[in-house]
Every structure is written in C-alpha cells, then in structure tokens.
Length: 117
Image 1 (tube, helix red, strand yellow):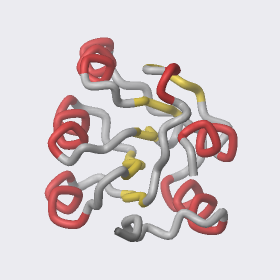
Image 2 (cartoon, rainbow, N blue to C red):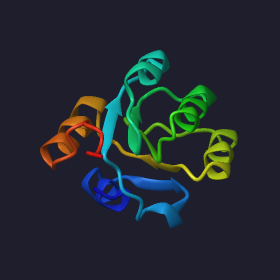
Image 3 (cartoon, rainbow, N blue to C red):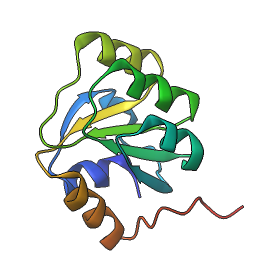
C-alpha cells in the first residue's frame, strides 16, 4: 500500500513531504507508547499515534519509518515537521480515532506484517 492510498483512505491532510506519497508501506503500528514502537515495529512502516511530541518523530527516524499519521486531528509543531522533513518522513493528520484508523488500514490489506523477503 502506498502512503497516497493511506492518505486517501483516512481522508488525511498531508502536513509534510508530499513528494514522498508514492512510497510503499508494508506494515503499521498504532501506538502512543514509543517504547512499544521501538520493540515491535517492522521496516517500511507507518506509525499511527495521538501522541504529539518530538519523540514521536525521533522514534520514527530510528526505526526507518516512512510515515506518521496523527489521529484525532492532532497537529505537530513546526519543529516536529522540520525534523520529519529533514528525514523524508511523510506526516499526515486525520480526524479518525486511533482504533478506527488502524481498523480501516487493516481491513484494506495492511495487516501489520513486514514484507516477505
């Protein structure tokens, strides 16, 4: 699934790195605990979260994630967007709740498993 498909499916606003919407995503993680993201995330993933602080972007950078989706219409700061832009991470914002957004992605085929080698 591409980030553009995720953006359309979640009716999300693109806040950063619109030129990377064609990147492929192979798994997803819906979480507000960044320690869990560090423990369970897989490569080429999208992070869905309601947590809005710089640690979210730093965690995504560490885990080579390609997209962050802020749920419940949350908006990151300009500093967070600058950090995401510096690292080529697409940032989206949707009015959907975390549970709803994750369910929509799962039902559309993004099952949370890493791509097969």
